[in-house]
Length: 307
Image 1: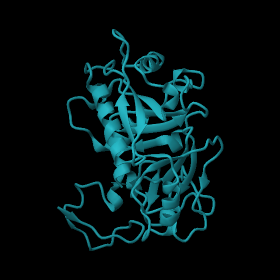
Image 2: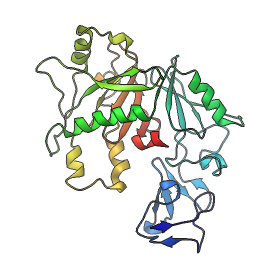
Image 3: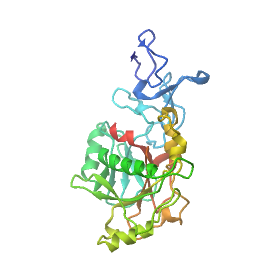
Image 4: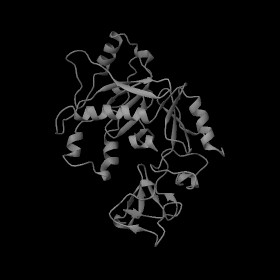
């Protein structure tokens, strides 16, 4: 058992801590406190927070134009928290990040009914009520990724990792598609392959899967979003030990990158909407066939959807 008290930006109040304060590395906002080499910084998913000055050591990967890219929690830690060092996202329907909103609502990724190929914007710039801005965008979206979306994707990621083997060449890539429910939340189902066909630890025959989908009465052009899993060597990374919290971020990034570059299978439109997803046992990557993958803006852990 441990008890800590903090100043607004995460600096521990001296003399107010109790219990085992050295064995538990996760402190303010549930973020790991890095004490090695005398750093005393919080290591969020995207960057390190210095609680003594209330600033991040790296720029915001989803910065807003009217606030310093080094600022923490929009300079208002009483109203906002930022456990990952990022912000809320709004995407265009083609899978490109359109903008950000610093709201206090449960994290969701919403898709709008237009395409976008430019830079992301601050959609709540100057607004006094960020929640109201976010609610307006959410009301007008056509689909969103929420906690149930994350659960269905995580199940596919786990299935992919557990399909076969314990070595480097382990796991089997699976394909999936997203159906927009009545609530607008996207739920994911596995794509079928022709008899005798399967994914490998390094590839998935998406063209064959979409052909089978059409042959079985579906229409690939009506699919809102498709994707596949990455799980090659997952069991090798984990070994037989429980998951180590210190390497979860490293592992998420390792499995997040779409294969190849524009022109490869991950970036071919294949007669579908351009929005794409990569799923692993730890999280997802959102990207587009129309714009090269941006590692700073695209990766989401499953835990992000619970905040």
